[in-house]
Image (cartoon, rainbow, N blue to C red; front, side):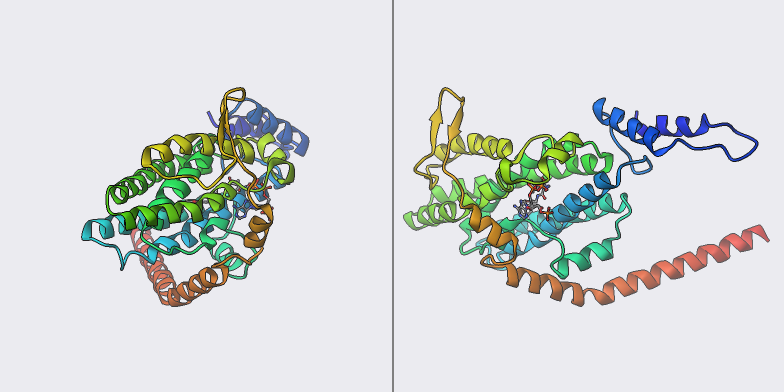
Length: 342
Ligand code: FAQ
């Protein structure tokens, strides 16, 4: 059941005829919202929700959508340079999936009243963020494998719990996205396995990519819990189900045995199993680097934004053509409707 079922029954209980019945006041609506969250039920687009809940969701979903779209760039650079037709086809499909994820997510943001064109404008003007991870360069084909293994792996750790997020359209988008991300992760790992069975030079490429992507991947989960201003409220609203540090730990625990199997070394001298905690201990990421990258000063921020701006400008004619076609279709159906009525 959605809250809409009970929200609409609350409104209709106000009475059918006579002077306009008074709807539920803000306090009732808020209590209803809180009770829905407490019962672990979903909030749907037509339900009442606090402004802060709506704003937080638009912020997070838009950042997520932008990340998927900008995230096409680092790997996209390798489509033309992939070493075989098979690898090219796989990479093509993966990058296309990322475009699809961005589109589901923009649609989910639209159910909250956001306007897609406005969200894109905010990204292009640097007023909305996207994930820090996509501001690092892809220097060799091994980076494609490591992005699949680490970045998609981190995305899965972060996003599987979002399938239980309290906002219906976001949670449902995540189910399909996670299925595709898990395919992406496997393709990355399989590529690295193949390279590790190859020459010394290939094994060196893999280790080099692991060394460069490990710490930025840990930073993807966001600042540590004591420096994460949004976590407490987002968790109370059950938008986020786990804190940034919990998910980071989950990623480390999941990845260490995979690294052993692959035969690579994770570049952290403090990384070791802690039997008492039942988790791996690990070193502290350079949080000042995360802040620098988030605030626009990472290795590839300027390049990523420039490419996104150019793509947006070059796509203007497609948007215009699509709008003109939609307007023409609407006019034709209106004429047909009037003709049928006459
Ligand atoms: N990069 O208070 P918190 C993918 C910002 S998709 C940039 O902890 P929150 C698929 C944060 O927005 C990857 N900014 O914030 C793929 C906030 O700023 P604001 C994207 C970051 O929201 C794979 C401020 O710092 N995934 O990889 C980052 O509670 C391969 C304070 O932080 C998602 O977006 C960062 N790493 O937690 C595609 C998942 N971390 O807005 C291609 C959904 C934090 O207050 C190839 N999002 N910030 O000005 C989330 O789960 C959350 O938004 C977090 C941040 C965990 C990212």
